[in-house]
Length: 233
Length: 233
DNA sequence: CAAACCAATCTGGTTAACCAATTTTTTAAC
DNA sequence: GTTAAAAAATTGGTTAACCAGATTGGTTTG
Image (cartoon, rainbow over all chains, first blue to last red):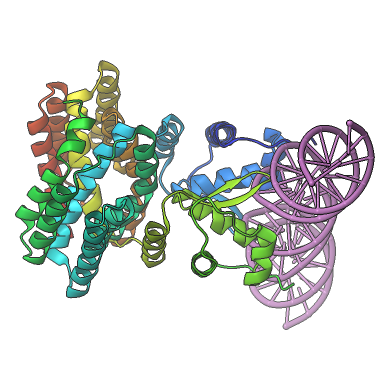
């Protein structure tokens, strides 16, 4: 068997190919929810790929809740019905790499929600953590040092205070992608220190006062320039 | 070396342990962004776990943009700074399994946005797909058949029409978890067919007319009972 | 005839061996 | 002494071999 090292994109394409083949297999063999798929070894032989690739693909479909593999037993079609399964698989195959605009749009959406929820639900402990992040941000800015990290941590501290593990998880997912794209496109504005400090302070105060409406408004102000950039205003 | 099969939870705990050890290693050795981590073999020996576990954990941290591994070269600390890295790792370690309430809360947030964006951006092709999903939903309901899948596909079709790959990805992530929890908690309401059809039809019409405000309002109505359930009203 | 048991087989999970590209060290030439 | 070339060691990626639990079919036993 030939051995070659694949790039990330090749990998993704290979996974998509296998996903499509698994979908066709399920449809052609009329496999119902709960039915067992052929073993990993048989699939790897039939699809002419390594067993490792089959495993990785199955794990991906497991992540999206389409398959369910049981140790020492087999891999099974999940209980979501064939129609839904086909729809979801088509969606997965059509998934594009996230563009910067969609990332920013999503970040704004999530953060306008997290800040409201944080204002409503924050514990005193949460508040202390947010304040600590705010203070280290201030210190960096006032010393004219780069404060991108501290900025980020302030926002993540708010996300943690929103007490919604799903939103929190999504914030974590997009954060590194945002950072990379910020660096790539040089969106970070320089020499806006005092203005940014005030915006952060306003957000913190609103959370402290548990004023959800004000918190949202202050976050909106904070995102104003990013918003304009995103929508090319 | 001992061989044992771990459950999903054990796996996650093991990964978290290794993540914490990698974090401590980076901090103790004062590794800067861009520096190279010890090799996978050395890490597995030092942490007394298998190399496979180390690889899986590194992949997880790569997913969150904290590490970056280069083939035949090594694994490197990403360019996000030590402060941000520590903050993000702490967030990752604190991530809880998603509870049902957070899932519903997030779904409502995402869908109120997708429906607005879909109303604004939908192409004619998108519209046709949404209508097709609506029609098969109607048909099932009118025949008194179970239509959970068709319901789901209608919502996913809207998500695809919103032209935001990041939001679309997140919808795909939470959808199976929503389904599982719906089944677990039996939230699905029965014998509400005609009402649900009208709600779906209203949403579709608003998207067709590209009336963003109406689309959002109709979606809110559609989520009304779920909303009440979520907030225990 | 049915139920219980047992061994052969099959399964996904795990580990160890291997590969090729890279990096580092050694060596040779100038 | 410096530099360039070559060889050895190191790396993440990949494959193949192995493991223990689950399944299955046939056999035995009540």
